[in-house]
Image 1 (cartoon, rainbow, N blue to C red):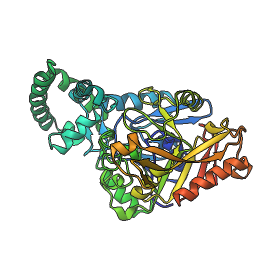
Image 2 (image 1 turned 135 degrees about the vertical axis):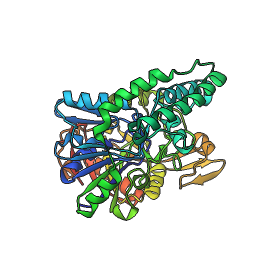
Image 3 (image 1 turned 180 degrees about the vertical axis):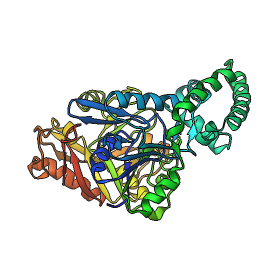
Image 4 (image 1 turned 90 degrees about the horizontal axis):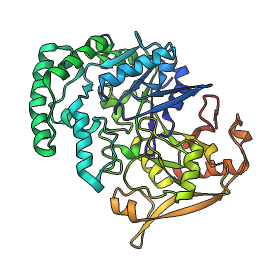
Length: 424
């Protein structure tokens, strides 16, 4: 099998977890390459639901190797809780889950700074999950972060934790009037995490390159979505890492020649969580209807997702910057009850029409979407098991999306269960 990257081609929450879970039966390794526990992948198997935040979605296949790459930032407490929850659900991580020794560690001061900074921003807030992701990445870039390999070395850990607390406590007290953190309290807690997490930590770059040499197949799993990428998303309303396919190499320690294909996952409509522009956002009435039918609430925070029409301008941007070869369409069934469906094909702003994505906050916030309108199908699709049996108008809708994206749709999902997915 080819080595593939699976990315979200909208603002995240596209259903990547389910897609990766389905594909994993043919693969040997799965690698999460960026983000932190601000992401949530949901997989439904029969009556059981698994919500994953750090552990790759492929963990549900008991014979597969799962890797958390160096591009991920890790809250050890959250990770250990997730491993324990999986164990209670009958999924064992020991011996097949490996964490990069170069992954950076999230500390309590990261979460506090995240929270206080967001409060201070007021109406200019980003809509962060307040889990310390951004401040941890900021420390990484500023070369003051603490990595897993540093956590395992007690001398280095003590030294770097002290340096960080000296700086962070000064910032917290001066800027925010926060009393700061106690060294002994954090040291003791993280020394405890170290003892429990040590056996998972490895040189995962070496491991993955050795697997590639042996012709093993790998799925590289992105978190969030393209429009939340720190470089190519709707900046500054983005995450703090590269959620695009290019992040797979940097975030896992393999070369670009090891990637054979990029698969983009998109909803049949559009959603986003948090603040920021959203050109095709629904009216309140339709928003509530689609949100309820699609169960559009964040897997990580429980926040209600904002919903809107499919935006071909945004997704074409994602196809381009990721080099997407194939597309998976999810949640087609959520549109079952609509008699007319819109597709955004351009934006109009100050008398000019933009057919290509322009990362200008004013154009995205104040521009008027240009829509094509197609007939709905008013028919239940959740029990359909093949593309051929879809309503003709549903097939027309998918065909039009494929024409606009100039990229092949290979899978269609009509429900949350593993079984509710079929090839096109």
